[in-house]
Amino acid sequence: MKNSDKVTEIVQQLGVQARKASRALMGVSTDQKNQALHAMANALEKHTPEIKKQNALDVADGKEKGLSSAMVDRLVLNDERMSAMIQGLRDIAELPDPVGNIRSSWKKENGLILEKRSVPIGVIGMIYESRPNVTADAAALCLKASNAIILRGGSEALRSNQAIADALQEGGREAGLPEHVIQLIPISDRDAVTALITMDQYVDVIIPRGGEGLIRAVAENATVPVLKHYKGVCHVYVDRVADAQKAWSIVENAKCQRPGVCNAAETMLVHSEIAASWLPEMADILESRGVELRGDDRAREWVPSMKPATEEDWYTEYLDMILSVKIVDDIYEAIDHIHHYGSGHSDAIVTEVDENKAIFGRMVDSAAVYINASTRFTDGAEFGMGAEIGISTDRLHARGPVALEELTTYKYVVTGDGQIK
Image 1 (cartoon, rainbow, N blue to C red):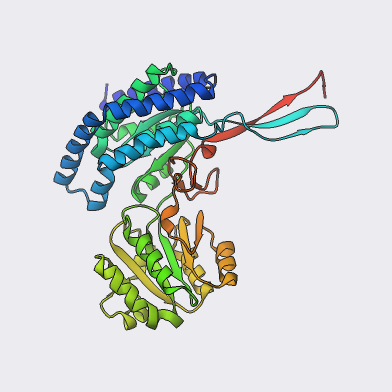
Image 2 (tube, rainbow, N blue to C red):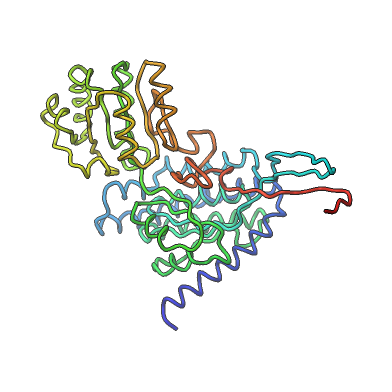
C-alpha cells in the first residue's frame, strides 16, 4: 500500500467516526455541552505544563527551520495565551446555545405551522497554520453548536496541537460526550489535507485558516464546500476633518498592536488637505515603533524617509511592521482604492464629519467597517460572540467573525393535523 493510500485510510476513518459523532451530538442537551466545555477547560488547566513543554519544542524547531517572526509569534503559547484559551472555553459555555432556535415561524391558510429552526452543520474540517489556540477555540465552538470537528494543524505546531487535543478529549470523556466529537489528524503529511478536503460523504464544510497560499490551495482543490478568507489587506483612511490625536492613536494601534494578524492595518490613506500638518508626526510615531513606511510620491513629499511604494505594495498583506501610505483627494478616492486593492476584511475611517461617516459605512464593501475605531476589533471575542473559528470574507454563508451562529444552518419543521395536497 502506497503512503498516500495509508494516509487516506487514516483520514477516512476519522471521517466515519466524525459523522457518527455528529449524529449522536444532536441528542446532547445544552447543559451537557456546557458541562463538557467546563471539563475541557479544567483539563487544559491541568495539563498546561505539558502543553507548554510541547509548545516550546515546536517553537524551537520553528526558529531553527527559519519561520518568520510573525509565524513564531502565532505559534507561541505563553501564560497569557494559555489563560485566554482556557477562559475562552468557559466563556463559550456561558453563551446561548444556537441550536434549536426558531428563526421564524408562520401559519398557512391550510393550518400547517412552519418553523425555520437552527440546526448543526454536521462535520467541520478545520485546516490551520501556526496558532495552536485555534485547536481549542474551534473545537469548543463546534461542540457548542453540536458539530463534530476534524482538526488539521500545521506541521510546525503538531506537538502543541496534539497536547491540546488530548486534553480536550479527556475533558469530553469525563463529561460523557459521544466518542470522536473532537479529532485531530495525527500526521503532518500533505496527503492528509487532500483526503480531508475531498471527503464529501463525511465532511460538510472546510474552514481553512492561515496564509493566502494555504487558503487558495484548499479552495482550488476541495470538493467539500469551503468557508474562507484569502488575506486581510486592511485600510485606515484619515479624512480631511479628523481629530488628529484620535487618528494618530487609531493608526498606531491598527498597525503596531499586533502586526502579524489579519485585522492589522496594511495601508493608510490620508486626505491631501491634512497631509502637510498631520502626516509627518504620524510618520514619527510609526517610525519610532519600528514601522517601515512605503509611500506614493505625494506622501514622500511630506515624509522623505519613506521608501517608494510599488503597485504590488497596495495589494500586500505584510503581517509585519510595514505600512503603505497613499495621499487621496477625497473620501470617494479612498473608497475606490479600498475596493480595488483591499480584500474585503476590515477597513476604517477617522473623521468628525457625520456625512462622511455615513458614506463610508454605506459604501465600503467589507466584512467589517469601522468609524473612528481600530481595525483590530474584528474578532469573535471582541464582537461579543465568544471565541471564533476564523474571519470570513465570503458572502455565503457567513461573513466576518465565524462564531456560534455561523456554525449552524437551518431546516424547516412543518406541523399539521392530517393535511394533504
